[in-house]
Image 1 (cartoon, one colour):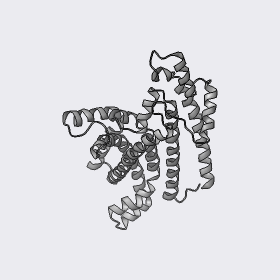
Image 2: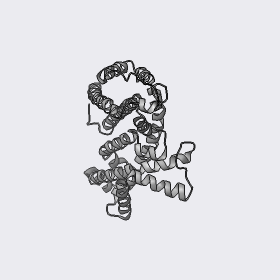
Image 3: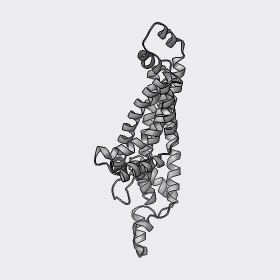
Image 4: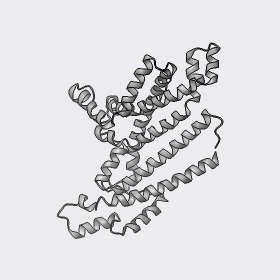
Length: 304
């Protein structure tokens, strides 16, 4: 296991370095922050002082070298627009995204596994047809369209739910619901397909022949063996939400890391953009490690 973790860490570091290089130089193409943060009639001296203060006068390669050296001391620089350490700004936003992703994926995983397993138990039945129909709709519907329709229907027309913010439980209903629909549809389809294969196995037929009731057959004998591909898809969908759920957070004004990255790119707050990339990449790395550990727990034949 230790060798495996070392290999995964090394591969992740290489990927992260490539990502940092791309984001660092591409973000600079958005323009000079001086144009945004100083008045139009600011003097040349004021502009030079601003650039010197934030290290923007140095050549790009020199700026990149300073940034890489600062990373070794976990110094991500300061946010231009908030005058605070960039890492502190990102962590404040990331906790909201983390809670949003955690709550959504727990609900998605529980619902998709239960409904997918029950649908696979009687293939072609009424429940299977209904579950498949709605899961296909959910997997195909764009998040931004669902979010806009939900706001117009439940917030504007009916006035049941708030359009944005995090003040109460009701503020979380629409973002979680919108993020729930697509992963639920995808994971339910994977669970259904995997369970159909597991339920046709010899050991399941033997259990049925011995008179074992349907519930233990589905949730004890078949489910564990059908979970390996499901774990992969759950991890992929969770990574998608951890990446910021940019569209959903922007539409609902949710103060997560996705909305923070969009605002920081538009306002040329380069330190925050890079810090957000680093924090998100580290979280996804940890999640992938947990998925690999889950593989080993579900299937003892897997050894790292």
